[in-house]
Length: 348
Length: 234
Image 1 (cartoon, chains in turn green, yellow):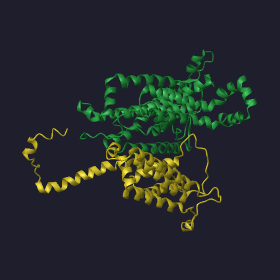
Image 2: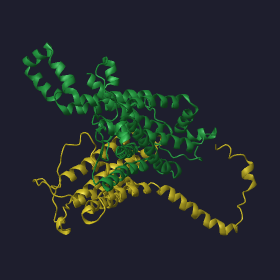
Image 3: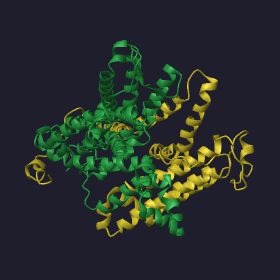
Image 4: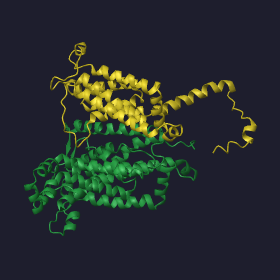
């Protein structure tokens, strides 16, 4: 169970951060469908930084510092990459979906091209570090402490630094968007930009701010995904995490708390698919009640084996859950009114 | 948005069909392959079959449905403005559901044509990632600016670049990812078409005005300003 919760936290963090990225862009009125592409690009730039800085002995001994530097670089490059989207969507008033799709295509192409040219490989791996004294250290682990209480184990044992940074960022950004002047202005640009402009808010600047924050967060999330979930392999794809994050954002109704709950739920169900055998099947089958049921009831045994011991059933659960919840809550969902519409000063 | 989705998937269908017909190497042959009607003899070494004709035919039929029938008009109206079409008496929910259903049917058609060519392995290994082939339909639709006829050509064009890319590492010093880079850049700049159109229109408007006025500023009649009506429109 503790293992399952640890994995949930690791899996949910990239989703949470990237869904938050989507929220920032959409609250400012830009549909950021390019999350996937920005994640790939951020992950790649972070992995490149790790690769080159690893050649300096100082950084090999200071893994955690290197990890944070890579996260920063990933965020910066993600922000820079998202400028392509904001330029086309804000200055040239292009269709935001087209721009986003183009970036989604561009990011894997660019990253794979550079990887191929520089390393003659199709993917870039960040191996677990071997320090100069010969001891192996897992990249980015914050603590490796087995003798904590269960709650402590979930949060601090085998946890990555990115988890804590992400939680900190989450609190900071929720505060930013709800409790500060800038946040209010940003949200107003997503609801009614003309009204916002009429009280002296620079809509274009607010939208640039929204997409840039979004890009930085998506780059951060991309690197967090590659370094934690994907075992340090950047190969020009993040397994559709950007699109998942968009779904989580809608699931969370464009609100930080909803997004956090949604990503935790999704992460939990997704990790259940990996560990269902250990965490669900074995405890269940060890109970007397279940044993007698399985031994006596032939039909139940068949159904049980066909469905509940089936890997694909558990792979299906997270997606079906999100679909069902969306179907029942879509009446209440409240997207920002002006998202996807290029800002036109003259429009009423 | 709805009609956009509609077009998009339709595209995907054509796109997939094109892909299959020209460039994929044969891996299995079972008895259910699509008939080729000798089209593969027309282009030596290809696996062209009648699915390219089926795909084009469907594109033409959809063009007619969308542009020449009441149903198509309703679909487009719902795509442009859902509320306006509701007030005009259309059943907007039915239209949205129908457009999604048609889109789903077309996407499945494309997948069938893709898989039944006999030169394509069909594997169930994509439960963790979306298959990229389906996603490639979106750029094809965008490039054709949502015109079913245009989709035929944009799909061929994109697949042509893509398939050409796979021959790059053998024949030249470039690697195969250059072609995806080219496609991405094309799509990115295709997004600017509206801006460029506006820019050109602005230039055109200025040219006929200037000789009439002999370079002077246009004179606005005084009464237009005085009647105070321009304030009311806001």
